[in-house]
Image (cartoon, rainbow, N blue to C red; front, top):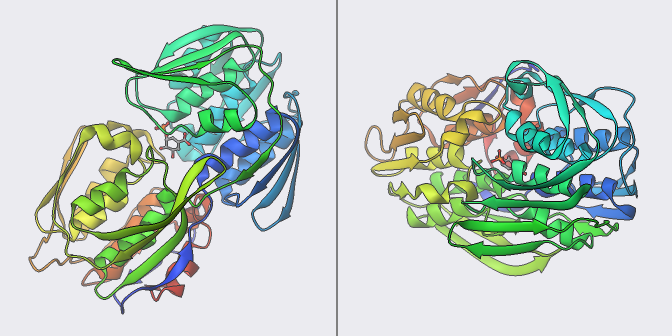
Length: 440
Ligand code: S3P
């Protein structure tokens, strides 16, 4: 997708109270579980970004009735299982969408063909196809298991699978396949990853056992279970809230509150890290919605200092390193981000693109195979030069991160392909402008 670029430049302070769009991970899951379940699922606060709309369309293709009732309000009538789609399933830019849907369909006796945009067609699918094959599904695709590919589902057998990389998508694909496998499925994760699938399976009436053992978290889904439709309220996405919050931290005089943000501790590594950097982030009004903790977060402009982010924190903030790198660019001293090799197989190679974008904006940066070191205060006095046009390779988070950097840099920063921002954060530019940001 190409569209005219966007430029962010320094202006006055940012102020306001905003709501982040619905959580992307929970939005995908609510549609997929709703479609697998028997009965009605009512969803409130669904993220209406392109990634999730693709999953909604896919669920229709697999036989569910999916209706939009109003802004963020959706109803899914599940048939208690999937039926054969009559056309190719195009998941657009969404890795979560395609990987979870492949898991969900693997236990049904038909084939489905999946594809996606250029970015998704370049991403590794073997990590999901490996365990699904061990359970009994077969596939044929491009080299290295890339999309487009056809997955043949059928009778599955039980699998106990130890995750080779920390991936909630792979964990979720195995658990969803386990719903229709003889004896269910078990996943062992050495490092805990986001647990929305486990929580939501329970909300749909399934039993999921979780045990923390010395070698990791053991998640067991007993076989022979059925799901029943339910009500889901999707909290605000912490990965999206991150952009206005970091913008406030780095823009002098700012104070911004984002309301209703998901505070699941497997998602909040960025907020912990920003507080360790000296960021004035205050969390208030903590409550529970649909089995998930949520709260309001207020950020005020702060003098940040560089930190070393513990590598074991990576799964709880894996999508947030690009915007953390921007905060780090305005901090005093170096910020070391290590153990983040997974960043290279996201919507783009995010280590490489952040390193290139930061360097183009005059920020000191070192790229490592599985790490990124940002040297803050490149020219002293907490300043970033800016004045660059940054290549995003169609990655929404690379685009938003650089626009936030442009709000506090000496010279404007432009990004290409801003249309892709709508995959996860439709209305981002309007929301930022509403707080006083100069983005055009
Ligand atoms: C997600 C898991 C993460 C994350 C992605 C959403 C999910 O991916 O980067 O944006 O909803 O399960 P991995 O499972 O590949 O780490």
